[in-house]
Structures are given as C-alpha cells and as structure tokens.
Image 1 (cartoon, rainbow, N blue to C red):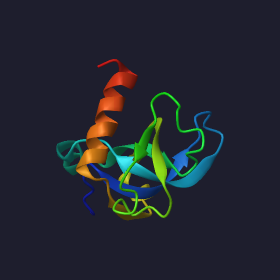
Image 2 (image 1 turned 90 degrees about the vertical axis):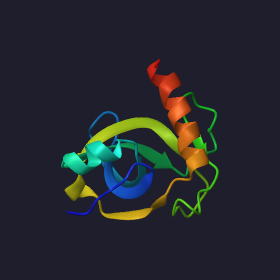
Image 3 (image 1 turned 60 degrees about the vertical axis):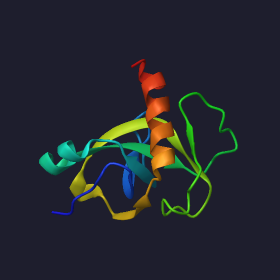
Image 4 (image 1 turned 180 degrees about the vertical axis):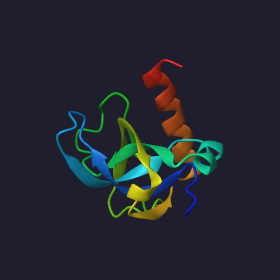
Length: 113
C-alpha cells in the first residue's frame, strides 16, 4: 500500500458539500502520519484554483503552489473529507511548511480550537 503523509497534495474524487456530485480535484492530506500509517483512510481538505473570491472565511492561499505540484495559484477550501486511500488517483506534490503552518492556524480558527 502506498503511504501518504501529512502535507501531501493528492488528486482525488472530492464530494460536493451537498453530496450530489463528485469532482476530481487536488486535496491536501491533513491527517497525522501516525493515522495515515494505521488507517485505510486519510483526512483531506479540498484545493481550488478559483481564488477570485479568496477572502472567504476559512480559506488559505497556497503561496508555493508550484512546489505543491499545482498548475495554478490555488487556495485550500474549508471542505474536509475522509476518503479511502484506494480512491487517490495520484500524488501531485507537497505543501510547504510555511503553507501547512498557515493552513493549520486557519483550521484551528475555523474549528474553534
């Protein structure tokens, strides 16, 4: 089984919030490496290149998008999902430490932690 790490950017079929559609999109692995090594699932957050309306609460602009394996400037959306690793189509790259630290800060604010 392929191992995925926290900070990895992966291409996955990501469900819409109303669960009626699925869209193939990049996502960032947010679950811990211990969880990822133990479980058949991973916890992810959606990534979007639609950053025109970026100022939304809970979104995080990815500063080093090329390093992350993304083709366009992108942001992390406040859309969290747990998926089976078998659904991952491929790994695209890795989020920079600076970007993951910002994402974790925004995630704590979003969840009130």
